[in-house]
Each structure stands twice: as C-alpha cells, then as structure tokens.
Amino acid sequence: MQYRLIYILCILSSVISYGQVSFSVTPDKNDYNGKDVINLTIVLEMNGSEYNQQTPIRLPDLSKFNMIGSGSVNNGYMDPETNTVITQLVTRIALEPKQKGKLKIGSVLVTINNKIYKTEPFDVFIKDVDKKAVASTSNDVYLNMEIEDREVYQDQPTIAVLKVYSKNIDNLRKVRNINLPQQDNINVHPINFTKSEIDPSGYGNMPSQVLAMFMVFPNEAGYVEVPSVSASLNTYSAKNKILSNKVRLNVRKLPEGSPEYFKNAVGNFNVTVYNASKEKVEVKKPINVVVKVSGEGNLTDMYLPKIQESPDYEVFAPKITSKTAPGTAGIKGEISANYVVIPKKAGPISIKTEQFAYFNPADKQYVDLGQETLAVNAFSHEQIMEARSTVEKVNEYTNNFLETVDTPVLKTTSFKVKEKSKFHWNVLLANIFILLGLFIIYLLFKSWQKKRNLIKETVPLKPIGSVAETENEIRERLKTDITDYFSYLETLKNREDYQKFFDTIDEMDSEVRNQYFQSSKEEFRKFLEDYKGASIAEEYRNLSQRIQIEKYAPVKSAEGIDELLKDIVNLYSQICK
Image (cartoon, rainbow, N blue to C red):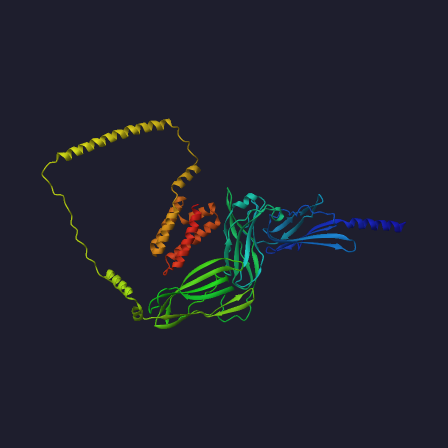
C-alpha cells in the first residue's frame, strides 16, 4: 500500500511539472554607486507546447531611470527525457539611475493563455548619483542615443541614432533644437535630422521616434565617452532642456608599421593633381593647380597632402572646396585644394605634392599612394609674344590704346528759340480750347466719381477675416518673385562680376526675410526651424557661412561659385514654396 501511494505521488508530480510557467527578474546586484549601470535579467520559461504568449513583456514604471540599452534572445528545445517542449525568452535591460537612495522596481507583466503572470517587485539602493539635466519626468520624455558598433579604429566612423521615448505620443512632436555632442577627442558630423514615423508599439509599449542620425569619428585610442545629445522640450508653460545617455566606445589603436609620412587618413582614398588654367604657362604669371582627394572615410577631418616648396616656383596658401555627403563607411565625395603657383624660370617644371598614405579598416592595412607630380612647361614673355598670331597682336594693341589714350570729347552746342515780336492769335485760341477741354473732362470725372460712391454704399461690406488670414494675404502681396533673382545671379556669375553677385545675394536674402517679417538672420533661422524643419534651418546656417567665406576669399573659382549658386537656388526655392 505504501509503494502504491509513492507511485501515485510520483505520477502526479510528473504531470504537474509537465506544464508550468516560470517568470522572474534578477538584478546583477542590489547596491550601486552613482556611475554604475543596473543590469536586469528577465527570464520567461514555458514548459509545454500548450502555452501561448499573448502579449509582449510589459515593463513597470522606469521614470526614475534612464534606459541605456536592451536586448533579448528566444530559445526553444525539447527535453529528451520527458518529451516536453521548453521555450525560454531572456531579456537584458541596462538602466542608469537619476537619483540616489532606495528605488523600487515594480512588477513585470506578461499574459499567457488568458492569464497574467507577474514578477515580484524589489528595491535597489543607489549610494550616490551625478546630478544631470535629465528629461523632465513630469512630461515623461526620454532621449536615447544608440550606437551599435562600439568597437572601432581610431578615426574610423560609427553611426549613432537618436531616439525619443514618451508615454504621451503628443510630447514627441514637441522635441526641438537638437544639439549634437562636441568634444576634443571626437568629431561629429550629422547624417540627417529627418524625423521618422512614430512607432506606437516601441519598447515596453512606449511610443518612440527617430530624431536624428550622425557619425562619430573618435580621434584618439582607448575608451572614449560620447557626451549626451541635448534638445529642448517646448510646452505651453515652459521650455525644458533634456539630455540623452552617454555612450562609451572602445577605440582600437591603429596597427604598427605605418609609413613615416602617414598622418590620420582612415578609409579609402585617391589623390590627383592637375592644372586648372587654360592659358599657356608664363614665367612670373600665376596658374591654378588643384590637388584633389576623393574617396570615403574621415575625408573632412584628415590632413590633405600639400604642394611641396621648390626654387622653380612659388606657391601660396590654397582655397579649399568640398563636395561631400554621408556614406556607409564615412564621409564620401571629394575635397579640392586650389593653389596659386607662380613659375620662376622658363622650361619644364615639376610640381610635386607631399607623400600620402592612408589606413584601410576593411583590409586592416596601410596603403601607400606615394607622391603625385604635375609636369608643366613654362614660357618666357618673349616666347609667348612670338607665338601669338597677327589678329591676337592687333587685339592687344587696340585694347592697350583704348585703356591708355584719352579720347577727345565732342563739343555740344545748345540751340535756343529766337524770340519773335509778332503776336500769334492761333496759338491763343488753341490754348483756350485746350483749357475748355480739360475743364469738361474734370466735370465728367467728378460725376463718374459720385456714381461710383453711390454704388459702393449699396454693396454690402465683405466680412473682416481673422488675423491669420490677414497675415497670409499681406504675405502673398509682399511675396518676392525669387526666380528673377536666380536669373540675374546666373548672369552676374557668367560675367564674373562677383562683387555685384554677392551684393545681390544679400539683397535677395533681405527680401525673403522681410517677406516672413524676420529682421535678422538668427530670427529667420529660428522661424525656419519652427515652420520648415531643423534640416532646412541647418542648411540655411551652413549656406550663410559658405556665402561669407566665398565673398571674402582672395581667389574665386568658377566651379565654387557655380556650386554655391546651385545650393542657393535649391534652398531658397524650398523656403519660398
């Protein structure tokens, strides 16, 4: 009888253990310092194929923490001894505390087979915490900076994604004025500020939205901490500043064995040098020599190869122009250095650049491009004159004559009407008829004006519109025809009248700002950010800086002015839509 009872109990225990749910949350420890990260491990285990998870894992209120990162893995296998299907879901969450003291982490919920399972709440103790300007908990808005590839080489880019989370989906639309991190040991370049569609089922059922993407180039080896991204949360009552989390990067040092003239170029590049001047090279006359670096990598932050000095020529500081855009492995495009070189002697001259090498992180090796050489043949002034044709000589003599010789001014004579003593009665009668005609026209005009006033009194007055409608009507009347400016700027560019070109740009910018009732460029940039988006405002700021640089540049290139005009037409066309 006793053996039968034991046998029955064993059967019941095997049936009970055949199908069950295990749900738990475990922290890595209970006591933390202010800079420590709280790692939570959530384990959901279902023994049996009859269990169906109906909802995702729902997190408790974590408003007292910053969520740094999260991840999960799902495993399933069959126990060979009991023939039971075991499904296991493991989730890891990294939290950063906002305040010190005893903090409570509530229950995690999940629904399985119409039954709600929850974990036991527990407390963690924070000894100290750094005071930071974190997101306003009253608005439940959190910024999160995510960097997937946290182990890179020095000067190799990694992509960061900025997201915003909030329980109230309306708060996502109030985040503005995103300021990317700035630090000496990193270089940050924006990819875009285009907001994504709002994801209503974000992590933990909290709506989220991607605000910006940018590239981070660490310029020193070791552990590098990327500072927080700041933004402003505009509400009707106040304007709060919110900060994202910080991200720590493991920056690997570049391998040994680099060429002695290697500086900091990381990526994949090519170097070319050419003469941009179309005329023959003449001694003591300037020519334009362009050194162009193209490729993808830390293109905008690396040291460009310069032209070496030589007793055969004199070289001046270059003007830098760039055509770049974000790529998959860094900044891609081309950067050109336009040098002014003056030959000192006649004959063949070799213009050489510095030796250049870069590190390719894809192949994990250095690439030596060596030195680029441009061969030119300089002629003396006598040789240039002898090689000219007869027509060219005549044109030069004519131009010199018109510029140096004063042409005589023709003497003009003023003609006066001679006075006559004879009186003309025909003229008097004609003047009298003219005065009578004018008087009759005046009477007809007064009678027409009275009839018009009577018609106006009978017509009912139009209703006065709202302030917004009136403002739109005034703006339409003051709207500037921007295409006239574009065609005039194109004409000035072709004539190479650059002084008038930049004066016209300033006049066009002032007209556009007055159209939107904005007096200064800073107020206009804020207006664009509010009504046109952060990307348009950022493009306006960058374009204004480029205009000032091109305006006061000592040497102006036709390619740079042409590229600047294209960007002006593109941006102002978007503003004046």
